[in-house]
Image (cartoon, rainbow, N blue to C red; front, side, top):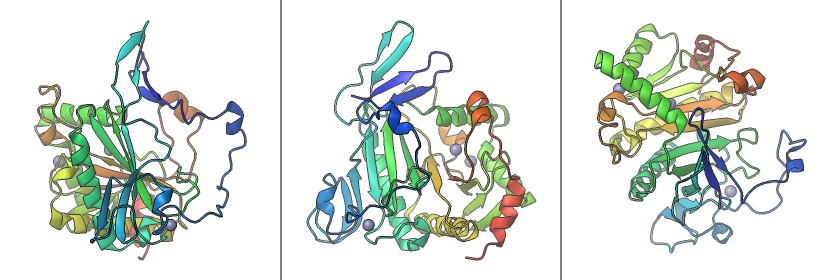
Length: 341
Ligand SMILES: [Zn+2]
Ligand SMILES: [Zn+2]
Ligand SMILES: [Zn+2]
């Protein structure tokens, strides 16, 4: 059973992956590029038996776990957290821990063996967006979970593994992730003072100045953030205020797909298909501690953060929590604006 452990000083939870633990010597000399696999891709049609049984699929009339689908969701074959069991929150002296309960799912975005989401059609990306929403709504029913993080690892350096078939993942966690909590707290403080959403204010300012604006289409904008942590870090935000991604209307999903495709294509073309991660930051499930989350629908604003992995986080970052970004976000935005897609 994996374990969730809390750092007693700063309150950060970590997952200690006991089951997929490596031997210490397996960390030595990690390769830059993954080995090429000879086996057929387990995410392609016809290989359904290579994955655990599907949880969700977009298919027309074909039986589950058989070909004839457009998108599939399966449990991770090497989950970071386990779906079965109770949390059993407990203390050991000054240390807090609980069982590593959670859901870890893989969203196979397409039935075509395509590596980069940038090469999917807008229709297919909008199917992926609908799938994210459907899965979050389903996992919210499990009272053990407080948050679902949707993310993507593209390329070996970004944790994308050796199989080059476009997919994203989600992990439902029994605690709120620290990074999300920091955003929630910051947004609430701003709202308490100004009675306005900080993200809405930021949007207005970025649209007015245009210094960091990459694209503004169909109710969404893509910008490089003022305090970017990484070169070419990009945020995508809905222009209309909304705390919770699951409220995205069907008509807007195609618009979000369109801007995601443009941004990912700009990164692919402009930077020679770099490895990247993206995360979806949305409001946590709002059922516990009603008082605490009272203003969340007003003060939080969902967004997607895309982080190309062109530099490495090193000693100073680890020691301080400061990031050193070797490219001004204004220069990154200008570059990306000019990449033709
Ligand atoms: Zn494939
Ligand atoms: Zn807002
Ligand atoms: Zn965020």
